[in-house]
Image: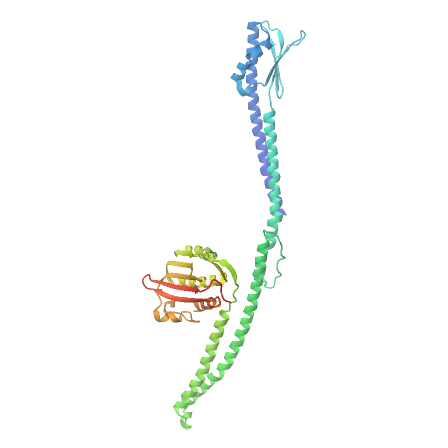
Length: 440
C-alpha cells in the first residue's frame, strides 16, 4: 500500500505544481491584458475630450462617429462597449474608476465643465472560460492518473508481487502447492504456465529419484557381480606367481581360459552398465501437437541468435515452405540445440547455418558448420553412446549428445545423418522426416 500512496503523492504534487504554474501564467496574461486595455481607454478618452472641446459636439455623437476608426486602431484592446452617460448639474468632480471589466472616465468641455461619463466595458469571459477549462482539464488528468495508478496497483502490481516469489518457491520446495487458477487474461496464462512448470519439475524430480534408485541398484549389482570374477583372476595370478599350477600340472591353456572367462563376465557387466546408463539418459516421451515449420525456425532463431552474436559466430536460420506439422516441436528443438552446440564446440566459429525445408511428403532440418571434418571412417560411429571422435581432443563432453538426438529423432519417426562436405569444409547433420505427422 505504501508504494501506491507514494505514487499518488507524487502525481498530486506534479499536478499541484502544474496548476500553480498555470495560475501564475493566467495572472500574468490578465495583467498584460489590463495594461493594454488601460492604454487604449486613456487614448480614446483623451481623444474624446479633445474633440468635444474643439467641436463643441455631443460626446455620444463623437463616439458613434469614431467607433469604427478606434476599432481598427486598437484591435483586440478595443472595449466591446463604449457608453456615454450625461452628468447631472450637481455631479461632483470625477476623473476615472476601474473595476474588473469596466473603466469609467469623465468627459469635460473646453471650460473644464463636466459633461458626463464614458463607460468602457471589456469582455473577460474568454480568458475566464479558458482558465476554468484548463483547470478542469488538469483536475480530470489528475483524477485519471490516480485512477490508472490505483487500477495498475490492485489489478497488476499487487497480484504480480504475490506471484513473483512463486518461481523461487518451486525451485527450493518441489512440493509447493499450485497457484489457484484464474480467468484473468493478464495472469491466467502465466499461472497456467507456472503450474505446468511445477508439474514438470515434480515429474523430473520423481524421474531423477527413480534413476538414482536404479543407479544404486545397478552399482550394487555390478559391484557384487564383478567381485567374484576379479577375485578369481587375482587367485589365478597369485597361483601362477607362486608356481602352484606347475605342481598340479595344469596347463597354461587351461589357466588362460579360466582368466578369459572371468574377464568376459566383467566385460558383460560393464556393457550392461553402459547400456542402462545410456537408456536412462535418453529417456524421452514425445508430446505431439500441431505447429508450423516456421514456428520452429522462429524459436531456433530467437534462442540462439543472441547467444551466437555475443560469441561473434555468424548464424542464419532459413525456412523453405511452411507446412503444418504434427510432432513434438520442443523435441525437435532439442535435436537442433544439440547439433548447434556441437557446431559451436567443434566448428571454427566461421559460421553456423540452420536450414528447414519441406520435402515431397515430409520435411528436413539440417545444421552446417565450418571446421575440422570428421574422417570418413568415423562417420558410422558418431551416433553411438559415449563415443567421441578424433576431433574431440581437449574438448569437454560425454559423447552422449548425438546418441540422444538419434533416439529423439527415431521416436518422432525420423532419421538423422552426418556427412562432411570437403568442397566447402563443412560438417552437416541432417534430420529427415518422411511424413508431416510424427509416429508415436
